[in-house]
Image (cartoon, rainbow, N blue to C red; front, side):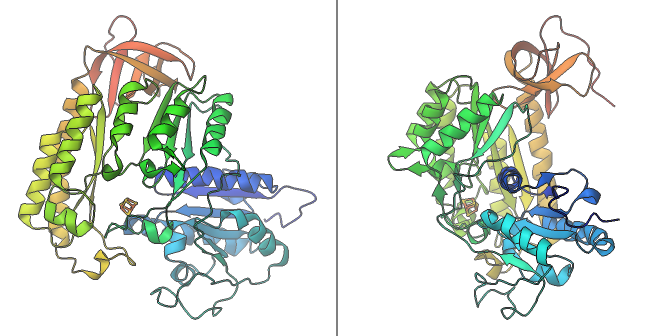
Length: 475
Ligand code: SF4
């Protein structure tokens, strides 16, 4: 039975589920922090919530269908408890702001990534009055998802893209005691790659003031974090006046108590000599770089509007590897992009085999409405996309295992995150290269411990602080 709305008696409870990229997870912490200052408390039980919010991703159709299925499930709770507020935030909310309420009519709230500041006010309005609120101020007339303004009642919608919104003054609610903190330093993207919906749903690039970022780093270190991960859609496009991303890293690395800094996701075309120099010269900046290549074919890269050629990308990889010993490189690849021929695909496969990334996130293309590529013929048949994807996955799995095995016999420094799930008497953490490592011992979370790698799978290193043990990681 529902608890009803009684602000004087019980703080309303908010339940959030997060889909998609790390920026969305950071936005969930932002939403929870902002809702917390407005009197909402977090619950991990949707059945106990007064507000349920799914913070969603629009990058892939598959993820969107999962969200629709989950909303449909959760709508059953609302059927039993009409006062429950069921909402959706994030990129998919922005992208499908109108169609989602057709597919799941129980949805009360649709809020985009630039409107979280207004979330408490919208929630309070819905819960206090139960009056319909309709606000389609940002639905452009040519939006294929749009319906005539105001036609549907009972949905609170705020999907305005605000190029000045950076949330620099809001406090995120992070998990207490976490060793690693994720800090958004810039939002949006100006690049408009032809397959990507991000510039349409997260708006244009904007960077947080450097003072706000450094204050956040000091705060999370004071709360116990030893590592920060700077986040942005094109994080290395960060700029505040004369301070570029390399300078931001350099200044953050000077904060006492901070052991490591990482960042994601950089754009290859924005990797400057200054950034490589900081990765080379500043020990706290981890030797780990995500370089999304997307394709090994210049013709496809050109149609994707990526802004580099395969030759420039190879040269960049060589410079980074030359400057930063033992750097771990990862990448993103899309197979089956419109017009990708067998020869284009083969060039991608060969590039992966040649550059030997430690890790690769491999996808098959799916059209996203609003993007330029969505208007082009989706020319590679689904079965062929799947075949290409399976082939590169198998290739990359082999490379990843070999990359990990190359660490056997070498010393690694592990930032301990907590007890390992197995075996007993071991801790788990990450190397500077972000390799998940299991090591004997009982060091506390946040400790930096050194061991020797004795075994490796494609996903995990096993290290020994003393005598190599025969570890059973199966089961
Ligand atoms: S750089 Fe391209 S792929 Fe990355 S977020 Fe921007 S538009 Fe999307």
